Image (cartoon, rainbow over all chains, first blue to last red; front, side, top):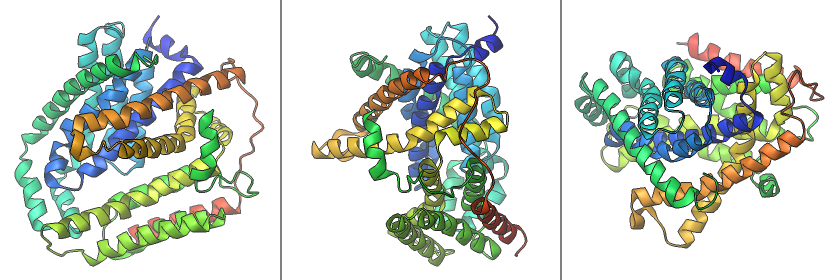
Length: 200
Length: 246
């Protein structure tokens, strides 16, 4: 079957699972993301710990995935949510590309291979790089906005000092590292709790 | 499903009996406008009034739904945060001041949108959302997950409060157990209970024929009413204030 045929054939149960795990992923993403916005350091470290924590629901989600489509839909829904919560529309653009791309990686490993799981989750996590596009590509406008608010010069200087242009690549690497760590965390918890509880 | 029993207590405006309720599409549009303005509008001139409008709309909607306590709590929290945020604009604060200003700014930006989503979860029936999305020819691969998200948002909220209470009662605080264990203790029970409810939902949905191929008929009535007109007018007004007024 081609990927598109698999997408068409997804059962209602699959789609309900997509909804549930997308919600869990989003809850972790939004709660941690907003907490991170409180301090310059935690904001800059976000790409590291967000995919780490999101690895818990994501790895459990993958145990439910047997065919193409579920990961793609989840990616697109995450992109839609980024748009709905006022993040850059690049989130939606990236999610439409990277969601299915990650899905294809998982599919190449038969949704079982650990190596493909790691790579696929890295690809999926890179969707989140869209959130820092304004910081790097529209930096002046972004800083102007911060100045217009209650962020002090000190706060802004800290962010600027921590984010030279090469940090864009740095953040992509952080997302990848966080994703790998998150995948291991998710797998460990899967074995420790979810299998025992009979839901993995 | 055990979750339905607690929904009534938690969803602020679970008023499906209201005769006039907003159309799901109206709620989606209002949500987008609210979040876009709350997250991206500036902090001076007309943009401030646009912010005020998108903060007032959810409160008015909650009042309309007859949930005045919830509306009042929302107004106090968001109004207070907005006042602090505006008062501390442009100020150069150190230490605690920065944290206070950040938290106030965060609450003022995030809470209106979340409150609206919460209201939507109480005011919109899942069947109406499905009907509205079908009218837009959105494929079921997206409508079903979206409906599940709307249905489960309150459930996840209830469960997370309950899990947090249980962990606090056992003294498993962030400071004592460290971040990784804390995540584990908070997330694992939450995920397990949500997934269990989800499995029950799957069975219920299949029993009711959601898995049947082809086009389904619906009895959910959706349409444009005076409440929709008011909500959209307020949103359009907010955009106008933001874009036109300097």
